[in-house]
Length: 336
Ligand SMILES: Cc1cc2nc3c(=O)[nH]c(=O)nc-3n(C[C@H](O)[C@H](O)[C@H](O)COP(=O)(O)OP(=O)(O)OC[C@H]3O[C@@H](n4cnc5c(N)ncnc54)[C@H](O)[C@@H]3O)c2cc1C
Ligand code: FES
Image (cartoon, rainbow, N blue to C red):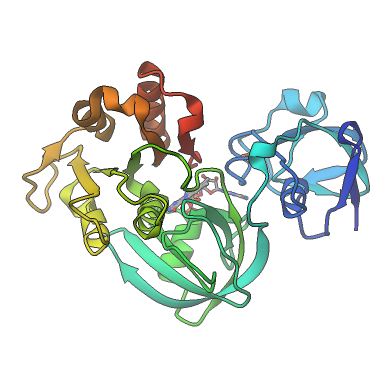
């Protein structure tokens, strides 16, 4: 098993043959920076000082020819072929409270939430807890490369992980999950990962913003907040944007939570009301515009969580910068 050394930090760890350098580091409790875990964001880059590695994913979007020339590689995709010495800055922020593990999940139930969002419920062979808002890597049978999906449930014992997954037209993993995975089938799960988890200690009201596929982590965060005694009395504002009325479902999931309508407030909006489909008498337009209008200057004093497609994430980030929200109050994992 290759040994990975970080001379500047005076430490080393083993990287099993079926693992990558960043994931093995996080499993060993180290604060190795990362975000997407699938080779897209580039946040996990390190410099290879000695040794040989290969990337699991060919031509990952977060890596360039220039990186190759500078001997820089993606930790989430780097599989060591020998002992390696590497250089990077470890940061405590990225240390996991719960160390990620590779387990097997058996598909126990599925529920359609909308025409293209389905909840997949897996029972784990070995229980692994997670903090609301975190995600896992799913190894979908027959599909190259694991995909990241956020858990939508909360758990005391870690026996079950549920995922709310949006079907991507012609998407490889989502087509396999929706069309071929059957009840009783088992798949590989690896987690929990991610920094956009619930901060129960933060003394502020919560602002949650989700679009499309970003529903799952925001539902988990809301469930976690509703169950937390530390958050008693805190107000939670949940904004959910879709394209048409047929995309909307969060109220059905949130409506049964204690505090819905008193501490938990739901703000849906659709951006394409003219599209054929069910009638919609609610708010129209982009979700970040709705947040701005409904919350105004209060945004600066809130603990903010968001997830969704890149265009939404960019618009929300611009709004956060405009309102000068301290970045320590902002939590997100970019979806790719
Ligand atoms: C942190 C995070 C959390 C996410 N949470 C959710 C969620 O809760 N619900 C949800 O619906 N979606 C979520 N996504 C998006 C999800 O991971 C997939 O990108 C999406 O479902 C499309 O997958 P696909 O294979 O069907 O589509 P495709 O179009 O076939 O694949 C596109 C995606 O797969 C990835 N990919 C392609 N090839 C490889 C490879 N060889 N190795 C690794 N990755 C590869 C790429 O990142 C790309 O974005 C999340 C993404 C991230 C990064
Ligand atoms: S590219 Fe490795 S964490 Fe995003």
